Length: 199
Image (cartoon, rainbow, N blue to C red; front, side):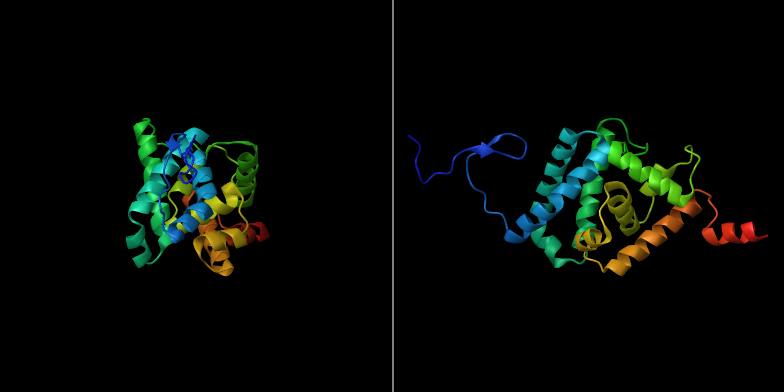
């Protein structure tokens, strides 16, 4: 019969049994719970598989946990942890021989609809234009906003909470990202298009 004071073995994050309770800092636990869905979706979007994404995210949280106390002493926790996620995703793509190419960008039904909407909003009707590569080259905060809002579908309030920003800042970063994308892809800005239409 099992000792009543000893915890039962449960499944660990990668399916292996956990036979003891590990004391995690409460702040880290909150961070992990609040970010795991986004990290997993982000990973799957890039690497193309839920199981691979979960393995990558497990590695990401191990690294963040190991550096947790130091990360808390620095500014921009979100930016630093996103950099860890991006690095692990890039490392996994490199391991699979896919470095130097556009991210996989898993195109399921919802993401396909959001990409179509973004293409329409940016007036990118030529599918040969490198939208995915251009998104990948955005500055970090603009990239994060575009991925969260336009690919994953978070609303402004959710993005602001995740990035610890004001909602107005999120909207500003989204506008800047879209302007950056239209310039990168050689699409005239709205002002130039409107002026050309009036002549």
